[in-house]
Length: 339
Image (cartoon, rainbow, N blue to C red; front, side, top):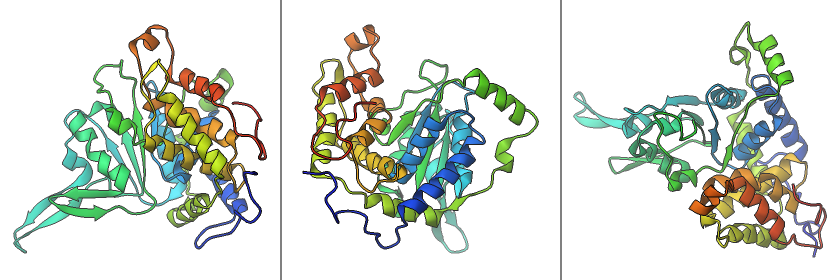
């Protein structure tokens, strides 16, 4: 059975855009971001996949490699509301979500929205805040709403959290709980640039801040329409079953103490749809799952002590899963190999 039956996809839905328009818009956004984050096209790709998958992005790396610059550049490339939260040990949950304040004139309480009420929320050094404050983001990220004093407030669409964190070995950090890591669709590590990219960065960025010159190349309404297009990308039953088998395989490996959750499976499916759309296809093939498997699954896995002692990383184990689980046959691009 083919992955893409005739007529199963390609129908433009209400509010959606064509795949050509999607690719043109995302290319402009990527080019804009790469003016700030030089030499990291793969990181920018995962950021766009996360945006189109209606997810949230966790950027983890050592200080000074451009984590916050990536978040700000993506936010500024989209002409919608943006807020930034600097997470510190004394930050309170109400500093994130907002607080109800008594109004003497009206004799009642008024809700003052916090910085989470924006389309793009940049959480800088999220693991420097206490677990109590970190948990203030759980409801926002999962349900796109905030509950304060028994009242619930909806967040606007699109809504995306781009959080940066330093490695947990560094001073003054708190490890993110498993429940919060699971809310992030993908995690990326920027890494140090190569010498050529670093030289180009020094030449172009030493005299001025490129973020100051960055202009929006899209807007929130357009992003919402791109998301509608991604939702319509066809996902054949065989490929859906393959996605479930990949997630289930992580729960059966002896090196993994806590495997991918059902939420991880859903995020893997959404990210694969976004990857297919970025590739110009309105149907998903196994290689789309391979392209997003490590960013989507690796940060959710909890390894055993023996795996840590053997210096096995979560990314290594995801690659092992990709090679163990048989790729479904019978459709286009099947058996093209693992990435």
